Every structure is written in structure tokens, then in C-alpha cells.
Amino acid sequence: MAMTVNEVMTHDPRTLTPDSTVEEAARLMRDDDVGSLPLVEGSKCVGTVTDRDIVLRVVAESRPFDTKVGEIAAKELVTVDPQQSVEDAMRLMAEHQVRRLPVCEEDGRLVGIVAQADVARSASEERIGETVEQISR
Image (cartoon, rainbow, N blue to C red; front, side):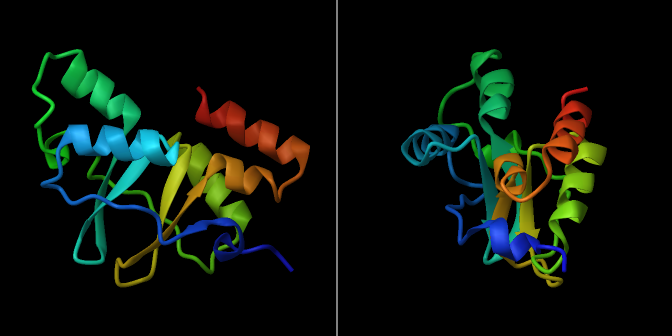
């Protein structure tokens, strides 16, 4: 039986709201040693912000650190259901060239994050290599 996303994901990840500042986001990323944080309104995932978003859309453009993450975050979400297979998550990562996926229930409620490293621990070396190659294109 295929391993599910629920078995490998990080449960209850730290989150931000769209009104959080990029300074708050950067500190949380540093403190938790992560490169991406989901944005939620209530419990619904409405976006993600990455360390790269902060560098390219704030630092490189000399914007203030009190810029709201909602202004720079990716809002076109690619998500995965916790009951989907790890293989499905790898396919989505490769197809959309992303290294992390918010894990959401059907109602949009955020329940976790699955990262490339999470799926790598449960897949064959060959499959991991293919996925990394496709993500990095």
C-alpha cells in the first residue's frame, strides 16, 4: 500500500496571516529553520511566502521590512490532501516546480506542510532524482 502524505508531512506548521510583516516572517523562518510559511485566514490556507519572495520582492526592491506578507506571497496555491499518496505529492512538486506543498483538507483547512525532504525519505532514489531534476528546471 502506498504511503500517504499524512504519514510524512509536518503536522500543524507555524503560520502567518496576510497582515503579518516580512520581518516577522523572516524571524519565524530563521527560528524554525524553514524556507516557507503558509498564510492562513482562520484555518484556511490562502497563500505561502518563501525566503526567496522576501529577498526578491522586498530586499532587492528596497521595500520596508514592515511590508505585509500578503503583498508578496504566492496566492496561486498548489495543495495536496493528507490522504493522497506520497507519489501524488512528488508528481505535483515536479509538475509545478515547487519544493513544498501545503497539505489541506477538502474545505481548505491547513493541516500540514510536505517538503521535498519529507517525500525523499519514503521514495526510491531513482524517483527522488527524477523529481528533483524536474523541480529544478
